[in-house]
Length: 205
Image (tube, rainbow, N blue to C red):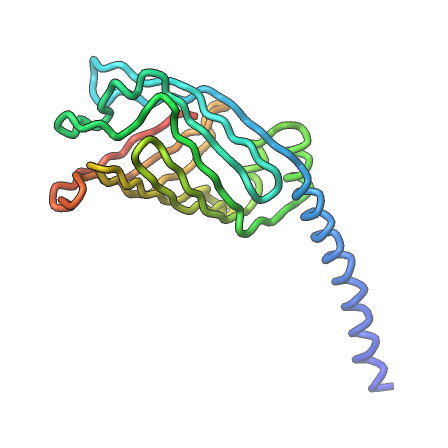
């Protein structure tokens, strides 16, 4: 009788765990096949009163764990958004392009139904995930990592330009139906970290 108790307990555990694992695998299999896309207006506020802001659009396209993104700000190539003694940030009319990969994701039915409804924002903010990304624009390269731990959606980034370095952290928020990137970073001329300046700025997506 005593020997039967562990055997019965093991069988019960298997019966409970197996369906759970099967559902998780099923969710992941569906997620890997769902294409998603999102396009919206984006803007960079002025650095100081009296200056104009920059506006454009961004798009995200992907399937499963892999995605691409692009940001285009018409006319931005004519401006120096950080006033680096006349040095621009190497932006051109082709815009910023990037690729990303989700390394870990807790796929749920909310994730899947949000994507099927075309609600990428809802899926992003309601799904725990972790990943990395790379980006390029004109003569610079950059990249970083991101994580949604169920409490906050945050990440980090670096940009290596020919003349300027940028690096810092960001928090992704949803406010009044729009996404906001709340960034806290530093920038300095390449090779001159002692001249670094700190910037705290919101970018509206």
